[in-house]
Image 1 (cartoon, rainbow, N blue to C red):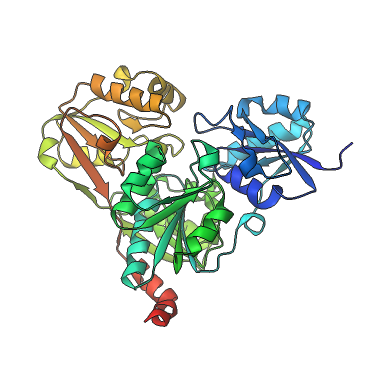
Image 2: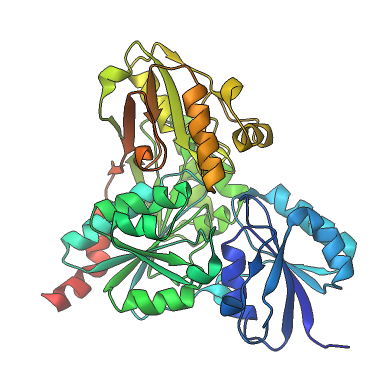
Length: 446
């Protein structure tokens, strides 16, 4: 009998792989016998390849649907199950823990001391309490300030390894052509494209030790651009966490968002321009109670529309950021706000016109309102997204994803792009905080 601790890692194609790489891959005390996958379509049924799993796993590690967990625990004789994905309620986590414990194994959550890597250059991490809180515009704001200070900044993005993992060990995105070269999904484009257009280099992939080695060759400062509400993979010198008063209270009830909230050096209460005053105050109260040493910054997410005259009085189809609507649990996003702001004649409900996997998305996430989530994890799903757009009878397509959707799908009707940025409303601002923290680094370069 082997004395190794037989381990199943529950994940969604990101944190699970990182935990394996940093702790289990070369650890003789453990044997990872399987991954399970949920949240993201197309991950289950694949293999974590030998090029990533290392010499202890010459055949790779199979990835199964999470629904098969009870069978896997029994048949693979698992000693422990590691929970390794994000943006789920505390109740959800304990339901999974209760299931695992009822089957016999230990249930484990892995913390920062076990999984964070230390960089040789300063790291600013931008994380959140929920998906869709405003990490992306906050990350862009942080990069802008650091670059204005004369620092060479590289962005490292939380993983989204949805393609061929053997080709995604370490990816560098320096131009929009790289997006096509790596055949990225819509979700990946949403996170990379605006950074690239601003002149920022983005690294991502599946092995964040390898990525860190590459990024530090170019960077004087790394900005960790987080995903979902996950913790940073790199130990931050400054940890900025974005909270969303439209979901006030979630900073205490979602995993691992509450951990981020408690660890933060800076808490950005975003969207205060559109949230209720009492919800902003609830987030502030929770920050003062759970993390009294954190600096609180209030911010707005101003929305701009490139051609508002194509919204006013017209019927519109609103396309929103996919993850914000799905596991972020928002019924609508910035596109709906823009449609209201510019007096759309009608917001056409796309649900009756959805096809294929888009129908399944609405069924799986019934809270989604009369908007179309920009789903595109495969060529087939992109085709189904395009068909749904074509079938929905609207004068104008209002796109509130961070990307130019026309680069991915053909939109034959007039298209309006909605953009959102971050505007600090209180002092100290993020710029004040960053300049104070990194003044020495900038002076050394002068």
